[in-house]
Image 1: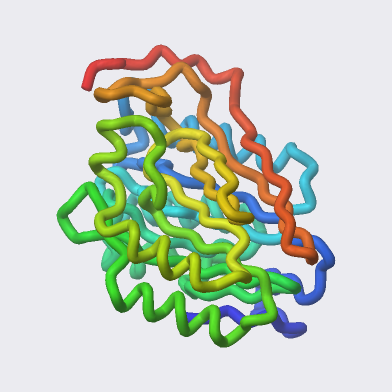
Image 2 (image 1 turned 120 degrees about the vertical axis):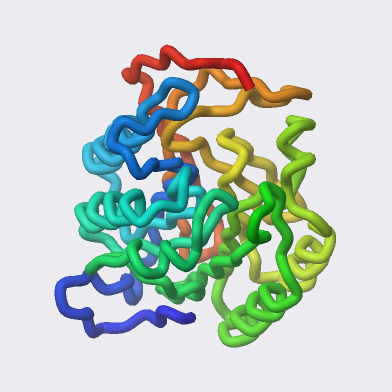
Length: 279
């Protein structure tokens, strides 16, 4: 469950950086890839938009150390979708750590989302930081919950490295985003997670996907963030289902050794978004 920093590289895979003063991450989320190459979501080909995001990451010039893939990587939970994603993520030539979303089929994912660079570890320690990847999914449900076992995992991970700053990741939103229909499909019993986070002064940020929106709020020294999907976006602050006009994107995070965070969302503005906006 843990990827500790190491001077030794696994054959063919970049090592998680050992002692960078600053750790550079890219978060990619909610790709919704189908088994078919022609698979579309709201009239958008999700493979095409994912590859546009991937190209933008390559061309950004950022000195990225590792990638976080935070769920709903597949739309249909198919083996073919995960094999496609594994090939695409391996081309980044960076360590890739993932957690599942409500559309993902974890068993299929474990067998097929594999590659030289893809790591199923859920506790990553690098430099002055640790990253804890939580599973917030409930099988067969759209909404999520951080189960007691996941809270225990979070507690154990943080206690192992109390001297390191912590980034906590999950799929479902930990805070309401202001979109009523989405917040009704968020995290059940979120207060249990919030209470646990409040007990640890070394947690600097909580990061999620699911909402297909850019959300960023700072509360009591903790950064709370969501990231746009690599495909279709949901309209911010909408009471009912609504597709947004925003372009697909990803988030870059700069984790500094003093615990501060600098982050920016990058959008792929050149894509033609002739979307179906019906529910």
